Image 1 (cartoon, one colour):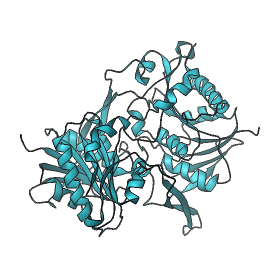
Image 2: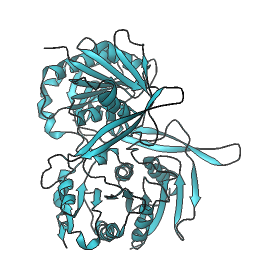
Image 3: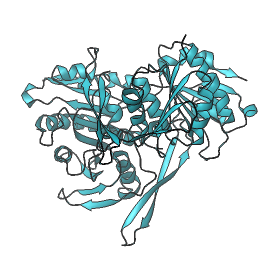
Image 4: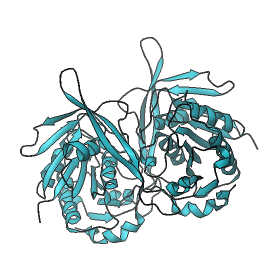
Length: 257
Length: 257
């Protein structure tokens, strides 16, 4: 078998330590093709750039690896990688991250890291987003690298029918204190926002979004629970947002008229 | 019962004809509270503004209705409405749109309209996003208003357990040619992007994202199929992205070590 082609993206930007850690691991498994934002793009969700031009520059941060920085969002990165810069490459896998900070539970909805992985999965590419539960620039990625290696190996050696998008979160612990991996469902914990008001030099108020993560009561098989018990959480995810349990409840709304 | 409190948002901006149409209908049912972007924000997905300040201005576009324009994304609009400008209001419903253009099938993932509605649903507010299958500024919203009226009435008169986020798309047809409403699942059709290359005055290339919507083979109960048969499509949606069918497939990845 030829070496697998692996697309590498993130949302913290091309120079983030997290993507460096991911590249170190992923290059053990295949030929890497890197397209990452030229600046931090956290919280961009599935945003795309349609009212502005997109700029791309080749970078030489990673010797022997074709890598670009892109002015767009994480999802833009996946699209322009597939359609322009790596147009001829048939990708076997997309890896996104390693994000500096949690994408467990509700965070997945806002996450550029996971939205980039989802975008690739929508194009039929098995995709994995990795996130470390530590937002610091100088966070320790040793545990993340250890488990990213295991999960990438597993993904490349299995042909999944359903599990083509994985949301992986790694506890911020020394490797020896991480207890293993757990397959989980998305938790329900989320953010409680506050808006910090300030005034500009002309006295006009403006706001900064702030807030803190609030733990809700979680089921034992949630990602939040696994992480709280020192396990790596793996949530198979999907882009079909249909609420199947709700279909029945709405049947009265079916109408011909 | 007191008049219901209804939060009105969109992604096309406070002055779009679509939100005017939605306000006309929604004000028949309750007290409206409007927070909409100060410029078009299509394709913003679930993006939030965390690295920039957010500005809000009161506007008097809609007599008798408290309305604001916000410099942020559609999701920012919901957050700052809930936490600052309408902090004391207990919302009974959130309506988003009416979007100028389809949010059926894969479009929901990129949609600011639907992301705003999802954000409200994550806060426990029953939410409905409305979209007309016509991107034109001067599109005819008569059919959309007719069905928005029916669906808002239905939502306010039922206590849903599951169906607290609806993705409603309306065919671009005269009312009398719309056949009725269908409860659907999210279709699988989506965009095929192209990137248009141009050069700046210094000869450096840049790109515009373009593309066209490609119809895939859809199941009979998909939104795409309903719309193609001149029905309004209603997809109950959710923010739990867990792929439950994939959980079994990954059990080998559970590990203690």
